[in-house]
Length: 209
Image (cartoon, rainbow, N blue to C red; front, side, top):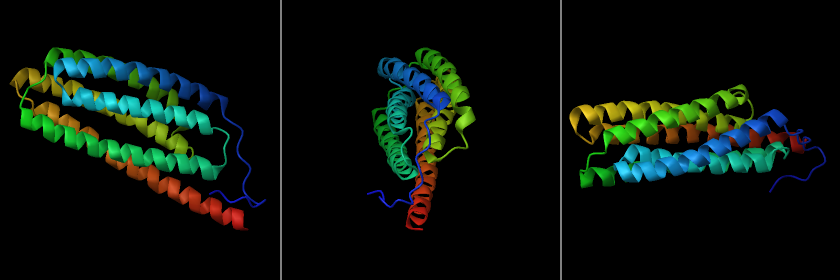
């Protein structure tokens, strides 16, 4: 529970520019979730399927971030802590899905995979540019920036995997990209968790003074 001491820092006024950026990112991520969910199932691509889950998770994160704008540092850091854990769990889920896809041995459809990867990259670059100005903010702002950054990197990897699948006829490039995306989720989640825990500790210290 947050300390109710009168010395607790006053919650900042919600940043209207950050709110607008979050709404833009939310709409983009929800739209791409459906595109990649359907496209990944059609193309039998683990990388696209993993990226669709990432889009959905990011959309939820942006919605949560909108809900806590203007809240105290303690509660914003608490939400960021949950979001960081979600990002890490996403990484573990992708690893499990990749292992399952490897046992099935079905190579993805490269053309569909590549086309959707390009579309997703364009969408994520737009979201990343919109959120770039807030990358050095608190843990909550940092988490949404990391989400968009990871998505853009992941989409480049998906496109490269599609080229690899097209050239080799193997599912290995698709699985490798899925593992890269899982690693991004785990490392970004760790960064957000660490910063959120630090902010919660600092908030307790300020509240007790």
